[in-house]
Length: 419
Image 1 (cartoon, one colour):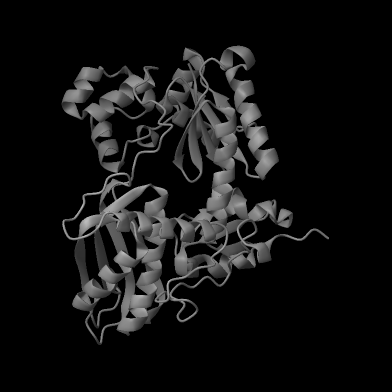
Image 2 (cartoon, rainbow, N blue to C red; image 1 turned 90 degrees about the horizontal axis):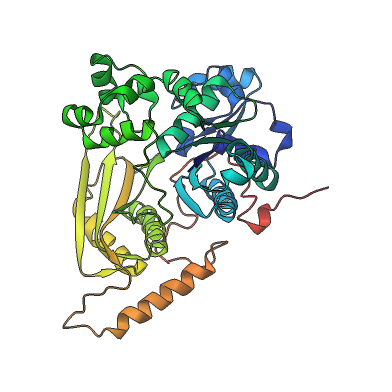
């Protein structure tokens, strides 16, 4: 029984290289919204000493002087490339769990008897690379936790094949001994300190600990980790993603906002995006929260506020959320403040098939609203064609992205041209 963790290498930076072969061996970094800090680095950029999360202005001059390339974040492009990678993995494995935008677990139990674990991993890596241009690492083990450790060891030992199969006890023990306890999946800083104080410094030492003692001293979650380190599968592949409990869309602004109407149109963009996500999850929401704040670095003024609006029935209609935001924002907005961030949160979800009928509203209205939203979503799948009138369309640019690459795979006008 084997599980593979497929992990895209420096994913955002690798996406930028797919249609730019001239960047193959050059340092590449990707910046956060408003070009504030580094959120992705190619291997070459890491070797230059560029740290994750470092403010861009601190490394900009030195990085550019040494020939580094920089991009603003292009999340539409990255999301589409991720879907392509995950679709390939799903076509190869009978069970696939998308763990994050650049990671997925695959259960290929039984397949290893025919081709072997390492050869299966090599086939996965080569297929994804050939069909998408994205390099991946493939860590393989009897459990999810051991697959994670295999992936970590590929990075740590710089394994050229980018595939490591922990399919015998000798290799497993060697990998566990070389993995610090803080690098184990699910072990955070606080737990790392507690384990170190208990004399447990690497994964092999943790695997020797009696599971029941670990449960008493720490938690049932860590007990499962110990069992997984010993090859006992406690975490199964979730081929159906768990339903989200909330959806948050928020941004910091490149330029401060001092006008209520401008702030409202910007937040309306977030509402439209959140409602699209909600419908894609086949959920309805009964509560929307709006929050605004000034800059925490502005000593001359300080204000933050959040307020929620509850619906009498769950909804997935964008117009309902927009109405609620307009009512709610007016109550927390204060004039003469320079707002630097705002956002919305949808919560209190219920399944799209469940509707609590109202005594004062006909039930067929729900169906009509859902049909309208479905039509709008279908028209907007590939390229925006329909907008809500109150959205911020070309009125104000709250996010600074001065170095964004083309949307090669999601916009007709940005399709790459081969000459």
